[in-house]
Amino acid sequence: MRAVIVWNEQTDYAREVREWLDDFERTLGLGRIESIDPETREGSDFAAAYDVVEYPTILALDEDSGKVLASWRGTPLPQVDQVAYWV
Image (cartoon, rainbow, N blue to C red):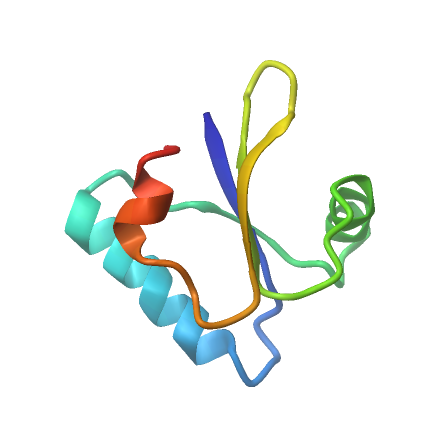
């Protein structure tokens, strides 16, 4: 499985996302969740493909099919263990 967070560094929620990502890495030792910036061309395409319209959004994806298995939109961000289950 693959976990992705779609967010932009130049926003008012950026600090919360950075702290959440640091918590995720430190608490679980699983490494970082893939970050995608919706302001880039690739990020915009990704957001359009998965119908992401609210940021930050975390998606748990099936690696083979790309199917969305779980998602969390906006703030507050989910508990670390809720996302870790899908990684």
